[in-house]
Length: 381
Ligand code: NDP
Ligand code: MG
Image (cartoon, rainbow, N blue to C red):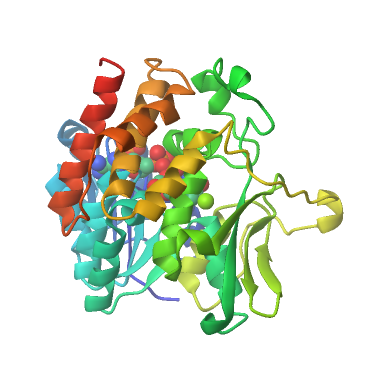
C-alpha cells in the first residue's frame, strides 16, 4: 500500500486510532491537523514525522513550534492553517474532527480531489447535500468510518441496490438502557461518560447516552445511502457485535459482525476494497454467548424522536438540531444544565426557529449560530 494520507483531528479518539492503523499498515501521514492539544501532537509528530502539521488554536501552535525546533515538520496555527492542511495534494483525508467545525475542511479536501474517509457525522448532518454535490462534482468517494455506516456499506455489497428494502441501524442503547425519565433527570456528566462498549471523545459519548448519536447517524445514513428516514429502522443491540444490517427485497438480512473496535472500520476505509490483517481481537461468538435486540424507547430518550422529526423535515432543520445539541452537550459537560435538559433545549430550538435549506457553508454556519444562541436563551445563559 502506498497512499498519501492526511488526518484532520489526529489528537482525538478516531485520529489516534487512525495513526495506530496506519502504523500497522506501514504508512506514515503526510499531514496532521487538530485543535489545541499540542502535547499529544508533539508526540505524534516525533513518532510519525509528517511533513506538515497545524493546530487551530494559535497559542498551542506557537508552543508546538517552539517544542519542535529540532524537526523538519512545518507547523502552522489558526483555522486557516487547518484549511491549508486539507488543501494539500494527496490521496485520502481522514475527517475525524468533532462537530460542525469539521464541515469546512472536509469540503476543502473534497475540492482538492481527495478520497474522504469520513468519521465526522456532523458534516453530513449539517451539510449533507452540499457535501454530496461537491463530491459528485469532483469525482470523490466518501467512505464511511462510522462503524454502523461501514457495516451498511459492506452489507450492501451482498446485493443490488435496486433490491434494498431497509437499513437496520444498530444502537448499543448507551449507559442508561432501560432507565426511566426520573432516573435520567439525576444523571451526572461522569455517569454519562461511562459508555459500556466503546471509548470515544466526550461529545459523541454524551450523544450515545441521550441516543442523539443514533438520530445523527440516521441522517448520516440518509445522505450516504440515498434513502429516507422511513427506510431506516433502529434496533437496540446491547452487545455491539453486529454493527448494522441491510434487508433486501427477498427478506434476506445481511449484517457485518466484529468486536467493537473502531480500528476495523477505519482500516477498511483506508484499504477498501482490500482487507488486510489488523490488531483487532478476533470475534469468538461462543465467548459473546448471547446477542440481544430491543426496540428503542423514544419516550425516555426523546432525542431520537427529535432527530427523526428533523430528518423528515429536512432543509435546514438538521442543522438546527445539530447546533442546538452541540451547544447543549457542551453546557451539560460544563455542569450548567442537566441531562434531560439536552433534548428539552433542542426541542425548544426546533419549535422556535425556521430553517431554509442551506446552499453553502456560510448558510450552515449562520443556522448553526442561530441554533446555539436560541438554545442558550432557553436556559437564560
Ligand atoms: P474527539 O473529541 O476525541 O476528537 C476530536 C478531534 O477534533 C481532536 O483531534 C480535536 O483536537 C479536533 N478538533 C476539534 N475542534 C477542532 C477545530 N476547530 N479545528 C481542528 N481540529 C479540531 O472526537 P472523536 O474522535 O470521538 O470523534 C471525531 C468524530 O468522529 C466525531 O464527529 C464523532 O461523531 C465521529 N465518530 C467517532 C467515533 C469514536 O469511536 N470516537 C465513532 C464514530 C464516529 P484537540 O483535541 O487537539 O483540540
Ligand atoms: Mg457509530
